[in-house]
Amino acid sequence: MYANGVESLVRCTIANISKEGAMLTFRSAHDVPEILDLRLSNTSPLKRRCRVVWRHKDSVGVQFVPSTTTAARPSPALRPEEVTG
Image (cartoon, rainbow, N blue to C red; front, side, top):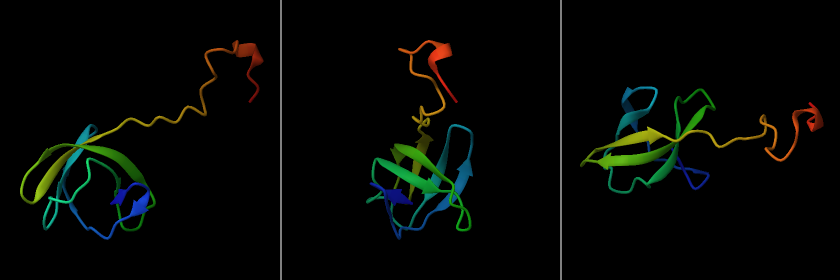
């Protein structure tokens, strides 16, 4: 898990996962931040930005936050013929 761009040593288990979010279990979910980056596997660098939508004693429900990367999209102020790729 990553919070504020820093890898945390807080380990969690992905109890269930869908396209929209996941349920994560912890020893204690008390200190889990509202926004976090979840690393989906110990062997993969893939991370998903998440927002906590509910909390319980040892688990949280998170919603995956859509990516805000816009590098692949042309600026709305430019005409398509002005965009070079």
